[in-house]
Length: 309
Image 1 (spheres, rainbow, N blue to C red):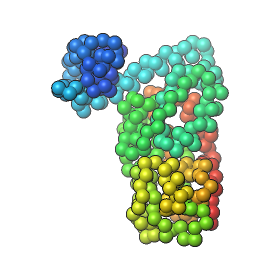
Image 2: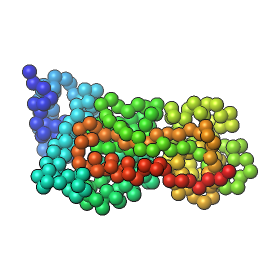
Image 3: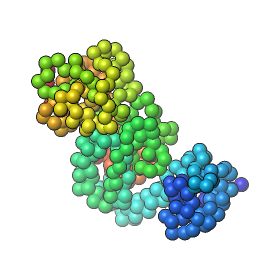
C-alpha cells in the first residue's frame, strides 16, 4: 500500500505549486515545465495519496479539501528538508543556535500589523547581531479568520506572532507560547472634556472573545460609527477628532501627540500575544533562536504607554 511518505520532494513541489497557482499551466510556468507534465504528475500524486486533490475545470484547477490539507503538509515537509540541511551543517561545525553563531537560512514569520511594527524590530535586530546567517522574511497577515496561526498550519510561515485565546482557536497540532499580556486603553483626542461621549472608531481585528464580555457590559460604548482597515487608520482618525477608540497596547506604541491615552481601570480587558509554530520547527535552530529573543525582549511586558487620567 502506498502512502504519502512515497511522494518525492519534486512531487511535493508540484503539489504546492498547483495548489497555489490556480491552474496546472501556471504551476508549470512556475516550475519550468509544461501543463501536461504537471497534470500527469498530479494524477500520480492522487493515486499515491488515494484522494482527489484538485477539481479540474475550464477556468483552472482548484484544490479540494483533501488537496488543501495535502498542500499544507507538503509545504511543511519541504520546509523541514531545508531545515535538515541548515541544522545538520551547524551540527557538523560543532555549534548551533545555543552557541549563538551558526543558526542560518530563511526564517518565515507571519505577524499582525502592530506586532510587525512594534514588537518584531528590536527582536530581529538582536537576532541579526547574534545569528547573522538567519534571513528573516516577515509578512503582515490580518489577525482575522485563520490569521497568523493559519499561515503556520498551512506551511506558509515558520512562526506566527499571534493573538492567543481568541474566538478562533489555535489550529490543532501546533505549539504556542504566550509572550505578553497587553492591556486595552481608551484613546481619544487630547484635552477632550468627555471622551466617552465621542463616537466609536473601530477596526475588524480589534474586538474578539478576549474583550467581548467586557464590551458587553459597557453601556457607554456605542456601535462603531467609523470602521477602518487597521489600527493605524483608527489612530489617525482619533487624532483628527473623529471619535474615540479602545485599543491594545501594541497598537498604541508611538501614538501621535494629538491623542491622549486613558487607563480603563482594574477591570480593563487584555489580550495575550504569543508565538505559534509547528512541533517539528520548534526544535529547529532558527526558530529556537527567534523564540529566545522574543522571550528575552518581552519578559517585562509591553512598553509603558503615555497615559492620562
